[in-house]
Amino acid sequence: MRAHSWKEPGFYMLGQLKKSIRRNYNMFHLFLMSLRLKFLRVIAIFIPDDVYVKWRYKRNLGKELNLISPMSFNEKLQWLKLNWKDEISTTCADKYKVRDYVKDRIGDHILIRLYGVYDRVEDIVLDNLPESFVLKVTHGSGQNVLCRNKEEVDWKYTFALLKMHMANNHYYYGREFPYKNIVPRIICEEFLDDGGKIPIDYKFYCFNGQPHFVEVHFDRYGQRKNNLYDLNWNLLPVEMTYPRFLGVVNKPECFEEMCDYARILAKDIPFVRVDFYNFNQRVYFGEMTFYPACGMDKFSPDNYDEFLGSLLTLPEK
Image (cartoon, rainbow, N blue to C red; front, side):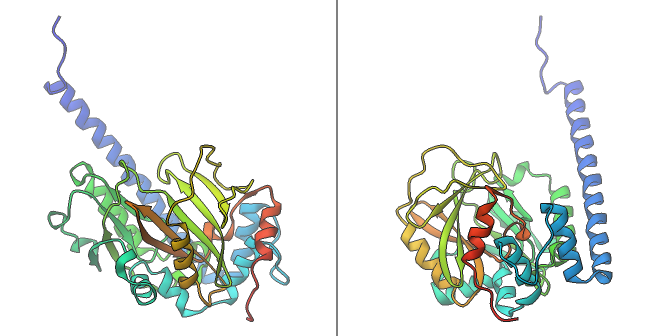
């Protein structure tokens, strides 16, 4: 009996039908996301930042937010949202402008190769780009497109997604001041290909200019797991939103180098998380984040929220 070939007309048409259904579903989901973001932007006009932050904190963590005398890490991050509005945070949260910030303080040798900067989605010319790359909106958080092979990407959907991100102001979602005044752009960077995945992510938590802990992310865009280590590479018995990675993790040879870089970049900032990659025996800068998980990380055990909070001295209003 002859086996059916996937190239036969019937199978080809079925495959095209599945692709069409998948694309229509994705586009509809994109439409719903766009409506939700527009709704958040509208209500932001009528709801003051402090009221919105208190409501969202209670909704996400099930606790009342204490802004009068904040004690925990999450509470202090909410206080910083409302009371610390230094323009340096806007520069460092901008994924394009932060490159100059890093270059001026450390040098461009830790910057990921930049292929292009675009003011509009329509300015992206795929023929001018390599097979693999990463697209990032400069004014967002997590709105990245990882392209391992540009021939396999549904660019109609991807460009529609980027247009939605470009029209959105991330500030309205969590009232994070650094995002409010960033000029929307798209940057295209080299894809650091670690066997088809991005390399391990080292995220240094810097309190009042000094790194104290590093959160290590494994398989960030897959089966994501996080571990928290002190600066002596002791694994801490805590989970932060995601489960812990239980395998053996060796301290990277460039760990002290990353610590020094984090200290330089975090100088004079109350709190910031500075991210690096260790790839091909080199350190690469990732990004700077002022409110990890929008200041609503879930700690297990809970007392780590208070412990991290004790490390952060809030500035004057």
